[in-house]
Amino acid sequence: MRLLPWTGADGQACYLSTDDPHSPLSRLADDIEEAQLACAEQVLEGVRAVLRDGKAGEHAVRFALVRAVESLGDALRVAVSRGQRLHHGDE
Figure 1 (spheres, rainbow, N blue to C red):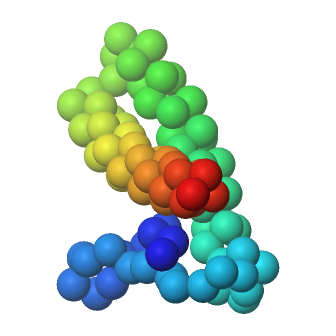
Figure 2: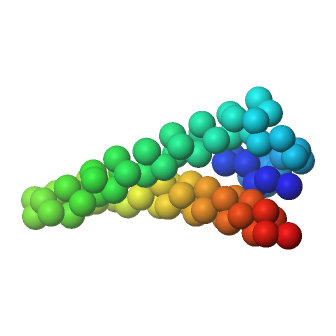
């Protein structure tokens, strides 16, 4: 079972049951994971810029923190999903 990089409407984890890493849904999940990781890199750059700016106000800092938390959540989901697939490949 592959943990997908999105949740269902109720916030529950979504899984894909397939042995085909090239299925359309697997490829879509791969593309979304790559986009999430690229976004996380951009967010990290932005957060660092806000933190370096001694004049950044509370709104800017809170916005940066919210985006960082979102990106961290996405990156952790990708890491868990890929770790599970690596572990499964060892069996």
